Image (cartoon, rainbow, N blue to C red; front, side):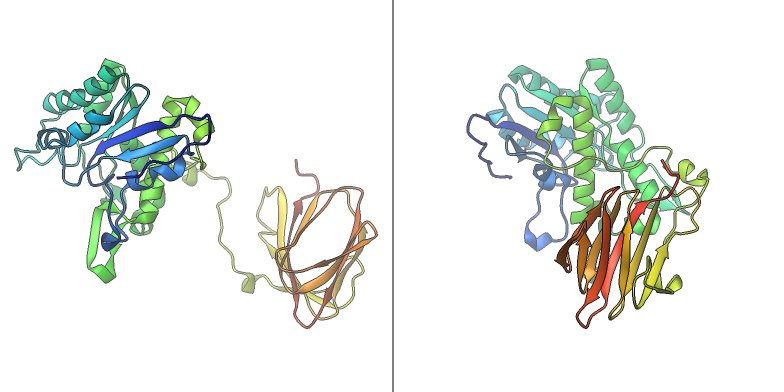
Length: 364
């Protein structure tokens, strides 16, 4: 279980408890890379929040209570806490009466036990629909959870309970990723002989925790200043249609296919090699290129009417900005604003390699 985190002076710690199954639970290093989303949720919250992850592998909403796991939450839950409740994977196991919950009546009834506990303690219950399994058939993602997500949505609407629709969000995420690429997020680990479409590798746990944190923020916008990471993740339900209707496709390029030998631009000396990435891509608002200044080469002095950024990838040089020289090397970035003049020359034995970006003429 996640240990307590000290808040800064004057900032009381708020606590979020997780009741859930193996998709959220904690795993030791011996199970690596298997990771539950609850195991990494703390990374999305600042130090005024503490995650207490009580999720247990193999449990349903019924068996989590029957086996006493909810009692551990009940002992500590207090006013102002948040209780995240995610079940469904094991509630579906009709072959096991100790876990199975019929979706339309039993499942919501057991979920209400968690809600009642939270509300009785002055805590905030939030229901989370079950995260999607990674099951594709001829490129189409299949919904394996049947009536359970909708039963939880209906319960949340009926009882006015906060809902993170992780099922919908993770389905959209998986569709956008696609069949083969999504394997890297689930427990497809050939060296361990695993091809598990339910549980996550570490990168998958972080992706799902992001969906949870983003859904939580939508329910409670006051959480936003306490987020330690961005939650701009996942994809819209329309992602595949958006992709199909693009006026111009997204692209991947390699510099070996676009290299152009050029004399030093703007009256510069020596020889350079330019890599004008996506030069012919229509409706691009900016230029992006790589330029290698070979030994003795330079970009001549010129005055700017637009913003331009140089970034040094490798090599060394002397950059002259508005009459002042700067020795530059890997890691240096140089911003030239309208009205300024600059020039740069290569020094040493190694090519000076720059990444360059600026807005195209006439672009807004």
